[in-house]
Length: 125
Image 1 (cartoon, rainbow, N blue to C red):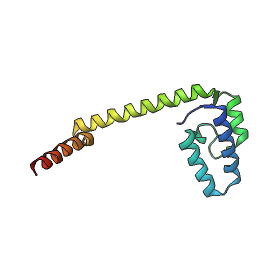
Image 2: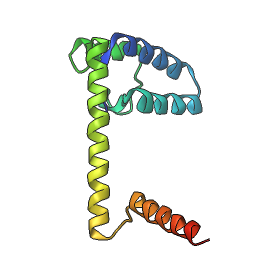
Image 3: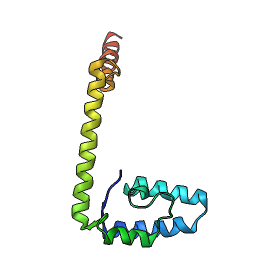
Image 4: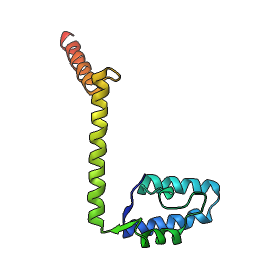
C-alpha cells in the first residue's frame, strides 16, 4: 500500500505520468507504473477497479471521493521525513534482531575490529 496524501505539485506530476502511461505501449506503461511507485509511492491498484485502466479522470475522481487527499508541500515533506525516520528505525531494529539471533553480522563492528587489527599490524612493522 502506498501513500494517499500528496501535494498539488505531486498530483500534477502524477497526472502527467498517467497521461503518458495511457498513451504508451506495454513496456512504457510498465516503466511509468514503476516510476509512480518508486518516486511517489503511488500504487494505481490502491485506487482503481482491478482490470480497468487508470487515468487522469480516475485520479480526479479519487480526489473527489476523498480516497486521495491533497495537502500543502510542508505537510507532505514532514510526512515523508517521518516515514524515512520510521523506515530507518525499523531497519535498524531488524538488523539488531538479526545480529542478536546470529543470523547476521554487525558489519560496523566488524569494520572496527578490522581497522584495529590493521592499526596493530602497522605498529608492529
